[in-house]
Length: 196
Ligand code: MN3
Image (cartoon, rainbow, N blue to C red; front, top):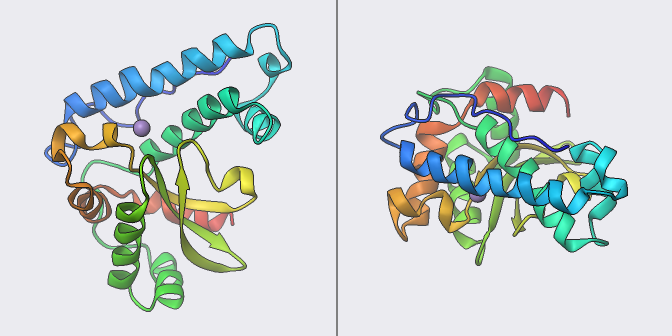
């Protein structure tokens, strides 16, 4: 059975940057629906006994309905972990060095991340990933993610409209700027970098 993990913070803990109402719908309805759908699709199939990661690998490119749901469960799990109350701020030293080495400066990285998410046409995700020892920005559409492409990711922002519409309406770039400056859990990003 696939599960809906609890949010790693209280529903109102990210206000005013992300409202309790947004999280109520986004975690309580959207993310929850992917879990329900994945479990319904898995019933009586080989997917029933698989971990989330196994189910993503087994369905990618083969069973689109299953992949859409397990991919979305995984992407949202990572999105929640990418944020924390009073997030943003200064970066752990080793992470900052790696970002400067790859992007020139922290500001240049932030600009590229925001531009990547703003430029993702339609629904999808923007990621910070490690490729050949270098950090880079990656976009993915719908439920796609770096994991199924064998790429290690450090950070992700959801750019589906449901992620920001209640708080930012059509202003996706404003949502992404707030995400990168006020919400990111840099300790989690550094933790992921250590596992790369
Ligand atoms: Mn979402």
